[in-house]
Every structure is written in C-alpha cells, then in structure tokens.
Length: 367
Image (cartoon, rainbow, N blue to C red; front, side):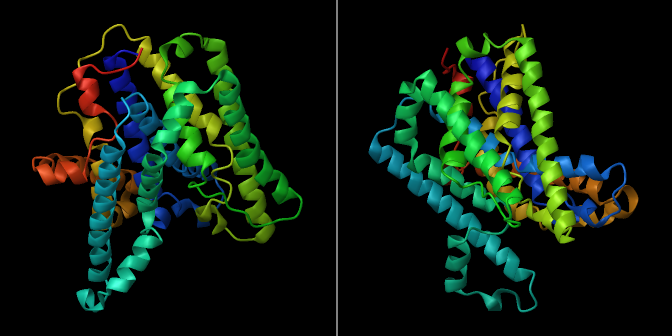
C-alpha cells in the first residue's frame, strides 16, 4: 500500500472500532436494552450487533499491528519510555474515572481511598478501559511480534489462523455441548489479542497479498462471516433458553469464539476497496488517526456525563437508537477534546499517535 491507501484503511477501521467499543459500553442502557424485550423481528438483529461490538478490540489490535509493525524498530530505551508514558496516561485517566465515579456517590470525594483506586486500576476500570491493557500488552511484546511478523512463513501464518479458529472458536462450543454450561472467552488471551490480530493486521496490509484476493474468495469470506454470527447467536440463545436467564446475553459468553473470520473479512474488504479507488486525498498533517488512542481515553470519562442524551431520547426513539446517538455525541466531543489537549507537549506524550497518522501523512508506508 502507498501512504494514502494505508491512511484510508486505518481511518475507516479506527472509526468502526471507536463506534463498536463506545456502543458496547452503553450496556443495558443501549446495546443490551433489547435483551428483556419480547423476541420480535428486531430482537435477533440487535443481538448480532451486540456480538459485533465484541470485535472492536480485535480490530483495534489489527490497526495497531498494521501501524506499528511497519515502522522501524525502536531502541529498547525508546520502547521502555513509550511504555512508561502509556502506563502514566492510563493511570492518570483511570484516576479521573475513579474520581468521576466517586462524585456520583452520595458522599462524593469523601470516599476517596488510594488503596481502592489501585485496586480498581489493577483490576482494570469498568467499561472499555480494560482494552487499554491489551494495547499495553501489545507494546510489551512488540519486539517479539516484530520478529514473527517479518520472518514468519506462510505455514506459520496458516498455523496461527487455524489455532485461533480451533482453540478459541470451536473448542469452547464443543466443550459447552459436552456438558459445561458456563463458559467465557476473555479478549486478553495471548493468541487472541496480543498476537493473532496484531499480526494479521500487518500481514493483511501487504499489497501483494491483497491483489491476489478475488471477488469470489471475498464472497466466500462474507458467507463464512454470516455463518460465524449464526453459530454465536444460536449457541448464545441455546444457553439462555437452557438456563432461563436472559442476562447471559449481556455477559456475551460466546462473543469471542468466532470473531476471527468476521474481523479479517472486514479488514480485507476495506483494504481491497481502498486499493481499487483511483483517487485518494492526501492525508492531512493533523488527522483523525492521530487522535484515536486519546479519544478512547477521553471517551471513557465523557460517556457517563452524556447519559442525559440517552434518557431524553429513549422515550422518543427507543433505547437502542438513542444509544447510537449517545455514542456518536461522545465520540465527536472526545475527538475535539483530544485535539485541544494535543496542543500541549505533555498531552501529546500522554495521548500519543499509536496508529501512524503522522507518518502516513508524511508518506511512510510499506509496499
């Protein structure tokens, strides 16, 4: 890909990621509001969208892998410094999140407890802040991932794909039907988050691979994507009906099982579409991709104060659609806040450009 194509792919994927992660954090006020409603015509489409939100972190790591693994390797001292800045940013915004939570309680900041804050920080704050720990894990393992990405053979790549599909996808389903009625696949599994999706994001950004993919192969991939969500919906509803517990929908016990094929299919579709475009605008020097990581941090603070949008619009258009407008409002405001904050050097260190927006606008991209 040239730098224009790489930027457009990153931009589209990151927008989808932010929408999925933010919408997924609306919980029972939005994305899961349908779970206790009668199973009418819109019940299953909303369930599919709820399952799709679980793909947000995976796509995020694909975008991160595509951006970071194409860059020249950092010196160990520079990598450690970047990791420390990431830890500092996560800790600082987690503190803000903790204080915001205390302000919503009856005694307010009088309940502040340093031990309580560190406990919450270690356990990952509520909502999508645990996704940030996956990003941190990516940078910790970045030197190893770089070696794998640049030297893995086609056989190794196929092995990783089938290992993901079998051990994260098929095995939990098979185990469930052999008698284990409660199972949950968490995103931070090493092969799922820190390794598989980041590496696939890099490998599927190579122009020589993308040009060999035919329309027929892409159609098969989308048919498999539909089949993957059909399996996840079927098994989820089977467990819900078996245990007579609709709250299982919000816990998404099988949401991570068959996400690999849908995520890879979306990435390849976007990349192929962008590469077939004859004219693409030059990326701006200051662009949206640069603010993506900071937007995640800031949105975690804004989503709760913006719940008023959901309360006002729910009686008019319903909780599910109101949650989408709530999500859009939080996302747009977060982007603007990050732009303002990045005018200061310290803020640019705490809210770095992890997805290569600056490099892509300057013309750095692999072939």
